Length: 117
Image (cartoon, rainbow, N blue to C red; front, side):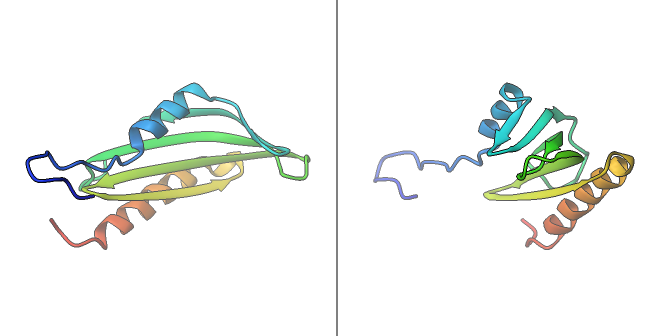
């Protein structure tokens, strides 16, 4: 975005504050027949190199075809400068710790591939 002479440059919003608000407002969501519950913001991991981090977890309870599901997911979003990265992993309840660790590892790997500031 360009600013006019004499104006302060406009900053692009990362979307993380909006996403954080949406997570807090909508603990149960639907998309067609698919349904999620217990959507919540969780404590983000301590990953170096990020200016902002958002961690979300929830449970898919209905697939698109309407059949029952019990799939946990972890969604991590990190911002460094103007770059926003997202890592999403899902699986059955018995592997929720591995899902979280995998999402953290993926986000850290993405960050490591960015040029250093």
